[in-house]
Amino acid sequence: MTAAVFDHDGPWTEEEYLALGETSQRVELFDGSLHVTPAPTPRHQNISGELRAVLRTPVREAGLRVLEAVNVRLRPGRILIPDLVVTGEIDFDDPNIEAHDVRLVCEIISPSNAATDRVLKMHYYAIAGIEWYLLIEQRNGTLHLYRRHGRHYVEQSVAKAGEVLELTEPVRATIRPEDLVP
Image (cartoon, rainbow, N blue to C red; front, side, top):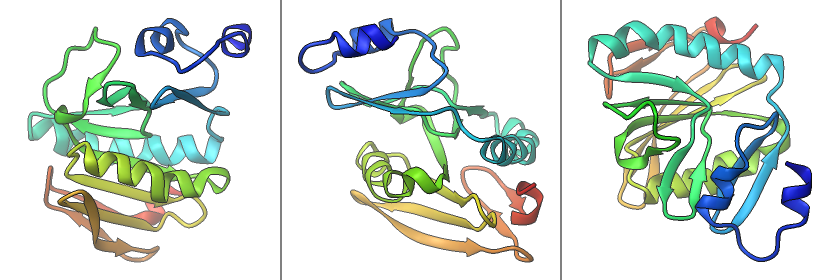
């Protein structure tokens, strides 16, 4: 991948981006530019896996899917890789999930890219029409749930250790921050 990235001239197209294939880094496409981050830490992956386990049964009961680290196409030329998504029915062989199929998107805030998750991705997800955005702080598991209001998100609830987050949409689930953090 390195030679392909450094030898590339001009903005990246979706076709060129998808031709990179699977990599050990997360590579996202932001309007013709690549955003590359290292593989997530074990703490990050533990939180993601525990959250998926909490959501698995309620999501299935609602006829939805919960997936980790998949391409979500927000619009042409903008493909992000959220930590976790809850979707409706999708084509499992398509390399991208379309934003209109995503009911909830989750990002686990890494200290090295907190601004990307709190500002840039939040903005992009909102204008793509994704209704629910869940942010999780890695250090303590604090959960921030946002609901889309027009082209931005409004915080609906916060749950810290010792508290619970009660999801009512797109699925009914109870999430305890201390159950997510190792």
